[in-house]
Picture 1: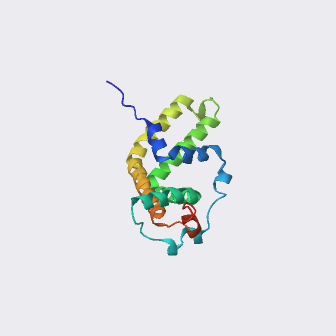
Picture 2: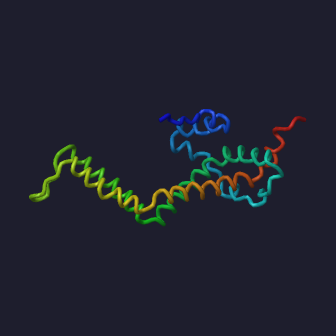
Picture 3: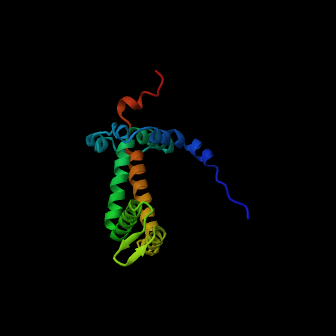
Length: 176
């Protein structure tokens, strides 16, 4: 059976995503949020308008994705927190896995002994796996992830498409 190979470099170069995500990898977290735009600029309802055509929509999205990138990252984090806080079982499962891995890691390869009960690290990892996988499947993480992708896509791309460029930026590309 032949493997299907998707040429990701063709997709990312066509959409200009390679350069946009390169800055995420190279910078620290504090420098990432240093260009956070004020809420008055982000929610400037006077600049909201329907784009005239697809070229204008594309121009607005390209400008706004770079201009408000930190604000969009904060919006994505807020939607992620909302998704976790509304899905208590998924949140519990994530906390269970992280805490279980931390506790097992703190044993440094030694066996866990509680009274007459004795368990190796391998048995503890297996027990954590046996408990967390069915709990995780019951928590429907795929539907939560799809909701997060849809909600953030509609919010971010909707804002980027309908938020007009500032006046001084709109005329910077034209020849005099």
